[in-house]
Length: 403
Image 1: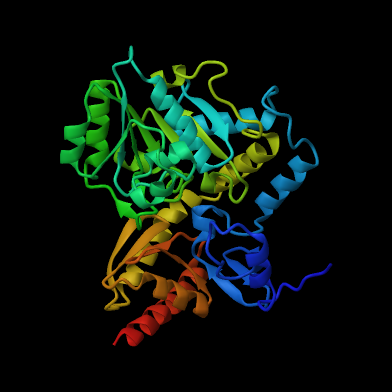
Image 2 (image 1 turned 45 degrees about the horizontal axis):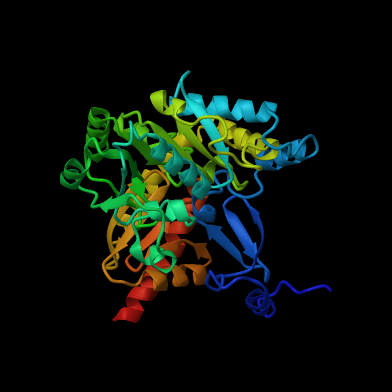
């Protein structure tokens, strides 16, 4: 049976076939190119969300398409009983760009939440004779939706329906005072996002990461940094922890490293690389040749095309553009590079995001008073100028309705 892709038919089909764990989608998207996508009725949208910080090279980028096509025609899957050239190449690339060096090790997963699960297991291995039984995470953090990742996530409403989640995790406020009170020799690991994306793109306090590194080193605690949303060049550095000048014990990566192809990774540094032993973790699909070949090609293009630097420059331009609107709704712009949060003076973020969609602009509202902006790393002058027009109109529409 042939189905129409127009807006008249797809919502009913979605409701009849898809699980009710997510709300009704905003549109039926049928194709994309560069920083733009089109829906089933042919309407074009400027994509300033990039699949939630995933589509680093935008849509249908020739490097991405070529990598998928070449590897799919060569070798797609072999299981973890075998190694492949693309797997080894990507692991070596990640060790280089993270600074993990010779002692670094890489575990490949299929998503960010799987990388978080691997990191949770890593933390449980840092027991030091059984004396370490606590894991510290931050209030309002987000590390994924599977049970271990959910236990790490500092959003009680997300956990409530699934309690009891794995135990031993405590959530503290993102303050240096709370950090100093919590971290001692009974802690196995400290998990944190350098910028809390799902909380509305919230920066950690000045000096927080540096103090976290000092305390964790002092007490033998693993410092595990969640770079799932911030990594792969998005914040104007390869990884956001590099901005703070620290070296963690492990990081989790996903989203932008695959440019749209599902892949995640746990990268360990130094002594943390010795914790996992044979048989303690694994994945049938993790590190498959297709995913690793695509990720390696995406990261190579980010590097060769100077897209890390582009993220830094374009992020500053977008920040100044938004501040220049002088909209009564805009109270602040947070974040770095091309992961930005627009703080709103009123709890109207859903209305702003809806007005943006109506204008042909994709952004999103992670909470009532924040708009998240995360365009592809390839974004340029034309896209930023158009964003300015569309976002300003969306803000004006909502501001006028609120009068």
